[in-house]
Image (tube, rainbow, N blue to C red; front, top):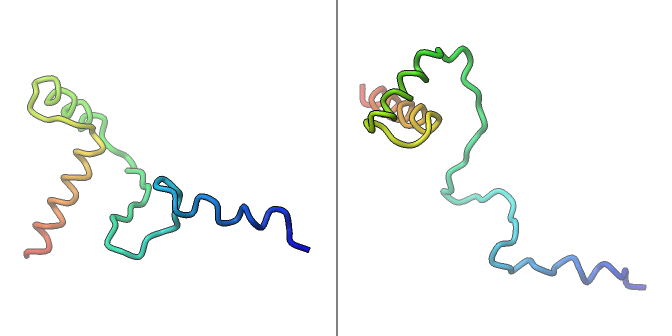
Length: 77
């Protein structure tokens, strides 16, 4: 006897917005991390620069870009 739900297993597999497992291609893989003991003054300085229009985006994106820039510099040493 065929399970009445067996026909449902493949429905939506080819849908444009279907969920897929982890990719093995060159997709950006991310990891959620927290920064410990981040100085409050650093965020305050970022907010002041943002109000003056000297930076844009979020503090998180700013930290991430700074990290990537420093990694590039250190790899060239």
